[in-house]
Image (tube, helix red, strand yellow):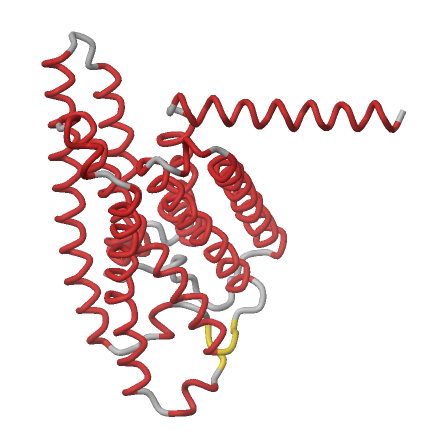
Length: 312
């Protein structure tokens, strides 16, 4: 199971140019839209002390940054695969590595947010002592260290096993082409299986504890139940990348007639959709973030209106 930035399309698509153009424009539109939404949250976060001094929102913005990186690079790779087809190893390697870092960070970040929420609800008296800004930044550092330890060995093995000509060649930009050693596939399979178990256990444990605590403290547990459902759905989409090759094999076996359309739908669902619902789950549903986001939008609208009136 290798976490790739985009599904493994063939180098040259046999689809008509109009269809290729439509898919590329759709991916670009989705990518730009998600990036703009996430950028608005980052802007609001940076402007208000109540947000950037809160561990919960620090973790949220770290998630948003990873989503932005993953979406932008994933869209770039998608367009490259459909247009240029092949690029130099060095350029592809940099794009793949950064994309993999962001991709590996995201489920770990979601698990950390679940733990923070669990401490806030189930251990409220200890929350201010455990969830400090310093501890949050250390936790983010540990997330990056974990991702680096997962991803960089692939590069080192490739540098040690591939001939010099390999690093000067042009290729279809895909993880399996950049890191072709079969040992790395087994290594990724083992690591991602461990990640799958740890993250899902964390999500289930923390949010069911939150649900039980909410029921004990109040008759109305609807909000906690909805939070569990939304987080479970999001993590399910995030973790789908860990079984990506298996899903692609199923698509190839059962959807031969519409293979490219099926793979395109797979790419949207697995690699784009999870990054579009993060702002909804963690941003729009949060009262504080929503308040400052509305205020920021109103200020922009007022500024634009004043400028138009001044031009007149």
